[in-house]
Length: 217
Image: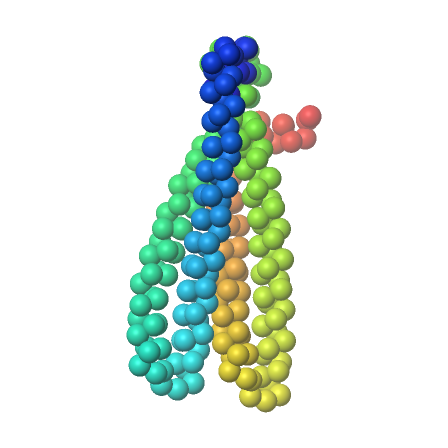
């Protein structure tokens, strides 16, 4: 409906249908957003609980209930991580394909007029890629802040451990944070390597054109 509205005035029936659908769609989006947030919180709580239980296991035998809890949580968290990795890979592929397609279309536009379909495709892709870049930048900034805060806290706890035994809560916190910092460093390393690899694999013509776009306009 909204696409039709962009092409021209809607009929009275279409306008009424659109007015009825918009709040329903907005409500569904909000419900999905809240559901996703709860799912992420539950997943994080389960992962953090595993770290706590494993830290306790290093200090002595777990209770029967704790052993059962750890055994139940591990496969769930492993499955969630696998799903997250698969989704992230698919999302990155779609984002990269869209960005590369923009580069191709803009290169074609420099050589001559685009077809009507290509103009429409480029107009649709540009805001999507711009939004993805903005989301990525915001996430990266937040991720860096979180990673730095975690690394700083690890340094504080390790300094305290050098002065004397930590409390049970501090031991669990340190174990959880060390894992997060290690994951953060590994992700940072992979992101840097991936960025370098993509640039090397990019055709020379497109790579040169990108450089010209960045400095020539």
